[in-house]
Length: 286
Length: 229
Picture 1: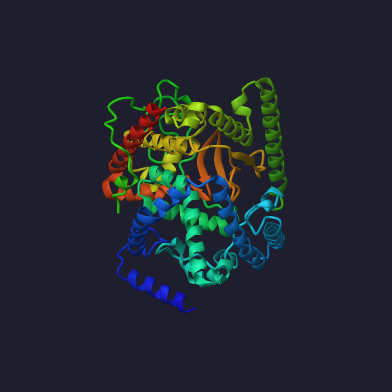
Picture 2: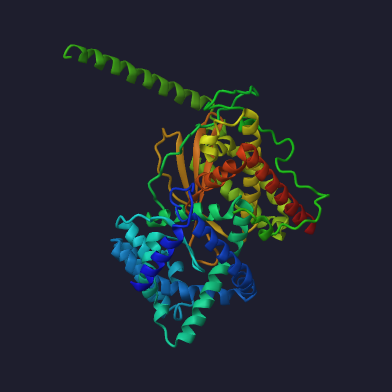
């Protein structure tokens, strides 16, 4: 596990230069933010433009590429499902792989989904999570993006489990990897635009969403639900009286009595100033 | 010890009897006031109805398909806003800072957060092309006052379905959404970090200011799509 140890050491070394952080699962925040900015730069410079161009290709081409690499993923997913003891899911994935590879023209067509075999996504990190290994601190990897300590350490295992990794000549393999990356980025283009709009601080937003999602996937959509801290409880419908008591369960403003009078969101028709909303412009926060 | 037991049993009986009376009373009252649809509508039925309505409208409205975000905003405000408890959502996202805010600040915070969420949700809806929704069975008791409703958005391109869950609370006026989960990430939890970060930088006023500036930017870009159609 040479590369893994090196990655760990790199992360640890850079983490020592970090200062006090606010998030309990992000002790390497300084390193992560720097890596996040680096990935952003690479994304803006190369990957995003490529993904936008890729999106101009006909739909069936994009779907074919997506299906082809998705099919290869199914093989490793099957192994992991079986390792996690989810035999039904594992066998379903084996079926998917078999059906799509043979009847699906080498994976270009996704017949499995149409046949009712739902696609799963499992990797060795999730398998370890299922076995009880905690995710550990949040880590942002160069190019690869969000990860956790656990998943970073087993990255070499996941790489070995990727059938495309074993394709020769290396030249073909690299081309394929780039194509896969561009395809995946293209799928996420709309979502990433949305994140830019929604987030106050993109780094934190991505981190917090990622950590939840990762936990969610380890538990296959059914994570143990945690209680809210400082839960004020439902807002009771009340009159306009302003209640100043701290921690009150019924503070002003009954949302149910919000009249439709006047749009909540006023879309300015003129005087918008013609300023364009640029994702990069909004990203000034550290 | 031995002699108080019968007393306890009697008291328990009384409680059960009271409860039975209460339930019977409510049942009768419910029958009498059956037309009050929103108070009666089960949370999963509510979500199903809302989701279907929004999806159908988004797919069939030519303006929305053409990218007119103003129309989407109107849709969201008319159909969805009345069923969301933004107050609680904002309070949960603010966490321990909520109590430190004055009522005026709280009000402003709720308004700004609501505006932000409306823009974000509208952005998601304007991307609807021909997705389908899948509604999972709800696992809750009839007596629960807080439930989770699970749905999925099925992509036309195949691939993973997008998980979309809601947490609803029961109020006299009907069930209301107070948290939402997209792809495994709960909204409240995800915004908590953002809120805490902004508050630590500039206090609650700083957070309100950041939100309001962001909303102005989003309003400007929404106005442009309105003109474009």
